[in-house]
Amino acid sequence: MSVTPETKLSQMRQEEQELRFVSFDAETALALGLTLIEEARRTGKKVTVDITRQGHRLFLHAMEGTSPENEDWIRRKNNTVARFVKSSWHAALQLRSENQTLAGDYGLSDDEYVLAGGAFPLMLAGEGLIGTITVSGLPDQEDHDLVTSGIRRFLAEQQG
Image (tube, rainbow, N blue to C red; front, side, top):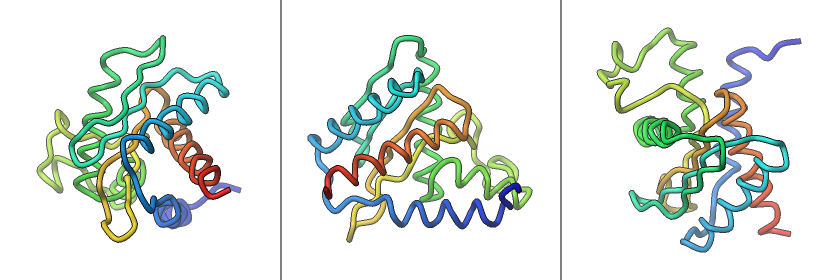
């Protein structure tokens, strides 16, 4: 049985509510970034990981087998998260389900924004969106799944 677009969008909204931080500093970024790299290694994936808080890049690692192009994808995905205040994959699926485009409906350039998975909003309790946690190098859904599973694992380890 396939998941309907409405169900998928609802799941993504729920995910964005659940995967939030009570505090976030440079040490948190380092630990989370390393968790994401470890998650990628464990599953045999080659990705670039970026964590940016309020315009300040706190973590960047490009695994062997990635390219500088991944950083451009990260920049465009991060812009999409900042514009729509939701994951880049959530924005992509929502716009597609509404037959909208970045250029036609929002006047946004493909040089600056992209509807692709992998960037997740860095949400801080009491403050809202403070940055992005981004993975690039895999197909859309896999980038999204890697970033969310890594965040989920990191948060569970912090609580337990």
